[in-house]
Image (cartoon, rainbow, N blue to C red; front, side):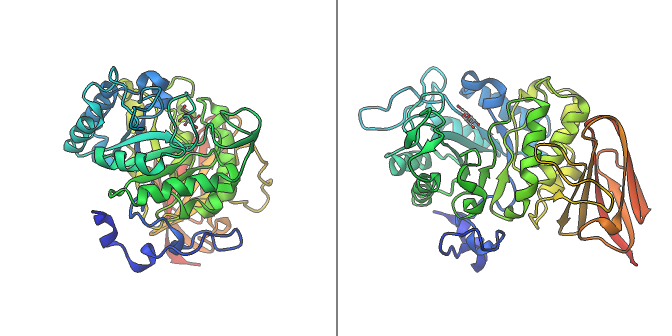
Length: 413
Ligand code: GLA
């Protein structure tokens, strides 16, 4: 039974004709009607942690235990997602996907049952083409059968990748001249999941192809808007810069997905990890951890458990922050990290200040911030807990560091 539907308001369950670019991007009538993902997904995924090798029941269960023991479940992390390489390399004689018996000796159903009994949810990965990116069977032509199988296993989340899809020319794996729009094949799986008998969170992974943000909300609960977060600071910068101009397409039930986190992979400084987490949080991206959580330092654990930042990410308004240009500041440059970010909240405004190059003191007048204006405001910096009030705020930042302020009006100007 799709019980999730019963609690939705009428506006949420009316899905009208496919969206066109000219229409208002945050029209809630056009959100996917599966009742899931009102706020961005919080969880973990095996891929950035260990690629194919991390796609095992043991790793999934260790991570689920870590969610509980480290207090991650208590702050909202819910999804344990296994990515590519969980299945054998061919379907069985009845056309079904088969869990790799070496990695999932009890099968998937036993694993989902166990994860559900821990108060968590379980996600799996597949592909819209003939094969996944790592060469395991894809769902092309098997959408209905696969969706029913996932439902029978109790799977809660499905990430649908875009490798080996219909291609005119170019590398089959990540075809640069596709035969058609990826919207066509993503809709097929949407419809299969919707009629599978189970509400399944649908995570689109077409790497931002075909301007997915303009139609993603009608098809999935979240959509990857860029190529992968390969694990370096340069990737954080690239993705943040691409996310800012399309921020307005995120709203309740459908969000730009900035890709999985790389906190704890050893390639970012502490400051860079703060900025990575901060921008993903205020951009209303899913926050899907991608490293071995049992090995996180206390400092990193505290970062990803920052309740104030998570509350911004999970704010019921669901509007993503974007860049704004204070008077006198230079314009944003494509591909570079811009220092000034802001976005509306149900109970205030979030303001982010980022030092893109060296150490820097950044200040902003609240009069320059969209959604604020003249008046006096109270602010809280969400990493340090520092508070203050006035008509402006400033931050002394290390190179690549970020301060995030929640700002609330206390007197009119
Ligand atoms: C693509 C996706 C990644 C990951 C890999 C798995 O590159 O974008 O997130 O799922 O495939 O092969």
